[in-house]
Image (cartoon, rainbow, N blue to C red; front, side, top):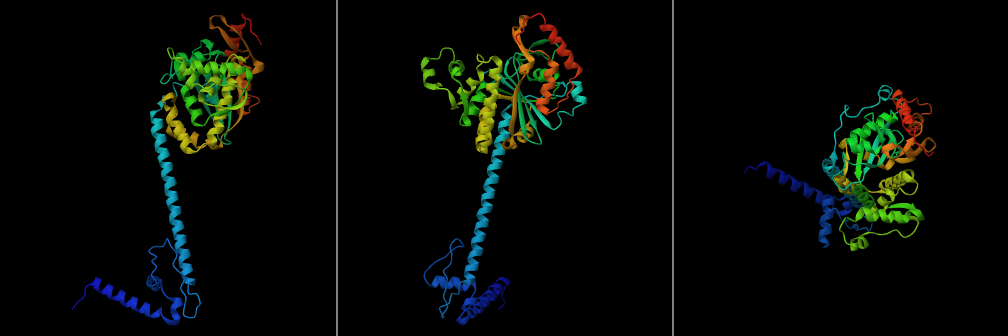
Length: 429
């Protein structure tokens, strides 16, 4: 009777099995195959049904170990197991990273993104033609507004105006505040306090104000409300700040004004606000640290912007030590209170290097030896650049290391106009 191919294969397999069984007996038992070993293990009443357990070492009739090949086989199986576990771990890590990327994409889609064209942001012609000084740097304007959620655009005055300049080669970061009451050209050939630019024309006009007065090429910005800063600091576990004795009462007063709304019962204040009671280095929560940023009655606006930079630097240090899950969580919390013109790829580029950033310098403009203050007519109390041209030279030296920068004709014109405007007023220097 003819057999089909499957029957023939099974017959051949049984022959091979019988031949292997004969070869594995007697003095040749040390050379036995894995199958014969498995059978012997079964006959002893023990079951080893997978490669996750080691097989027992067999003994020959002479009492010598026949397990040398067994040990080798066991090592191979263990190595195989480790390899599988490693691959599994890699797959899990890849899955987590992918999930994080998806969450980040979804978060950024919810973020209020403003598209500004090249026509919207006007660089100084000198900067456009001779854009060598700022090559290799990424300059981002940071605006902080005193607002609740959803009110981040035109109509809001900027309590914080700051330039973050990132050296893309060294990852070194320098921060420079522009005092909000600085008397400058608003980007419309009218002169007033710097924070009026954002209030009148939103981020577009504020960027133009910075570029025109300072010979900068800033095209990227991020605006945050107080809630975003509070939530970020809380998610980071607070920030360590050295609070001075004379700052405590103002810090607590600002907590109250920021947290309490008209008609709230006193119990809300007592139950939810943690008052600062002592000076010295301590961990401030989100509300405390944000209130600390707002203190302006000690050191005027100069002291306040310095406190703002201290908090930002403390946040940076905490973020560098945070795990990706924490950073993603923060992003999800603050997106409703953030506005930017950065797109997804630009955000990813910046965040991917956050661990290597190092803040190496911070200051405020106008610089100490080149500023004054006084009431300028209907504009009220202003910070005055006594010589805008000299301030711009010093700014470029501070940010980019250029010691012989020659300001543009436009900046020189603005400098003369400011000097003329303040000439009839008493300026404290």
